[in-house]
Length: 139
Image (cartoon, rainbow, N blue to C red; front, side):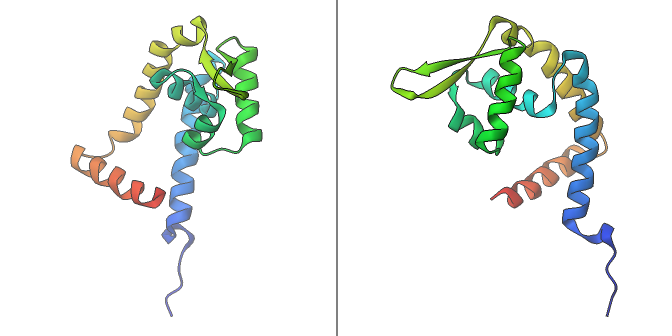
């Protein structure tokens, strides 16, 4: 029977790759006092401002407690604000502040550079194939 090595397990390789990406992203975002999860929330709002906490939790795939902590820190730094949903007073909508909107160009540049750093290891065809294969795991 063939003895399997740890580095032959898909989960191990994915986790190790994620850690490398996360660590570089965290380092590059530090100048903006942001973490990768905070960046994810801001990027979601840059695409569509005024999302509900439920929508953001689904997009980011995080639980309510984790999401609340991310929003709390961004709100403390004046990057987002909570507003009551006029259609459902029990629900809160998350909006960018002027400062949060002002971060977009600079922070997205950082994200593109980190993405480029890892993407340049692949040809365009390989990168398309890799993304397609990884998206299958999400399904």
